[in-house]
Length: 360
Image (tube, rainbow, N blue to C red):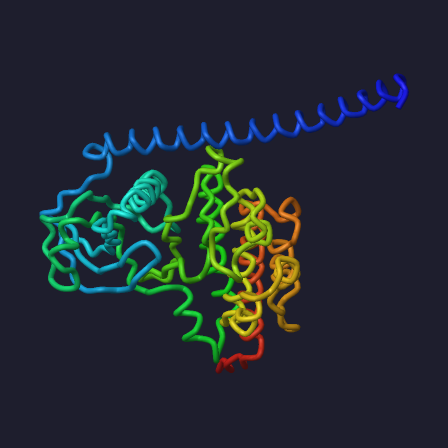
């Protein structure tokens, strides 16, 4: 090889090396960002723990845990009472040393989000406690767990989950005005969360509760995140298959629009009073591309305004999905139109009534 060719080859190699250096620098920046985000979150969790007594720690002598309700991914849920008020109590057993650090982080992270929320469509946070040896257990927990466990206390919502309510009505289905009301409750709750840069990340009808007046309340913030704190790090495949947005399943970065996708699936469920279970087994074994193209089938008789909303919410492209505030506005328009239509029907019915004859 001649000297000129050698210099040319050297120049090409230099360009390639520069490209690699740029890529490596980008990766380093991302890794540093992740490190800083983790450090920031860790610092906030430590601050939260230090401020526990003032902000969220409850008096366990006022807490009574009665009967078992359900088991979740990170603990068991019980019905109880706190200072005379009915409550739901999530109990995390920290007796297992291998899981203790993880559960502690989940516990404090959930509190850091939930304890500041105040909205009629969000289950109300009451308090929490690290160590519950002073709690009066009526039944359901052994002594070893009561010494090592931590608990999180929220309002008790007596109507059960929205999922259970829909399955009970799967034969007769729900009237359209109730479909809109339930959907609007969820949309308002999610709009509130997104306003404060909170991503729920597990939006599904099983995580929606119905209170004594029929209002829907969002619950379970165990996998929720503050969006503005760690946008680079939010790549975990978190959520429930069938509700999970395609970009979450692919393991790429995502934002609050993943909740909008999940809401679209919930909207379909509320209208159909059904769960898309027939496809779930196929989805578990399907490729990312197959899942990306999967959507539940919208019935032909579904009103076009609602069908179009579902399609917009579960659009493959997150940027084309509406903000939840826009969804709230659209549902409120539908609700107003439904009320006008009902009032017109009532007026129309009176027209067919015979006027009584007046005697002279």
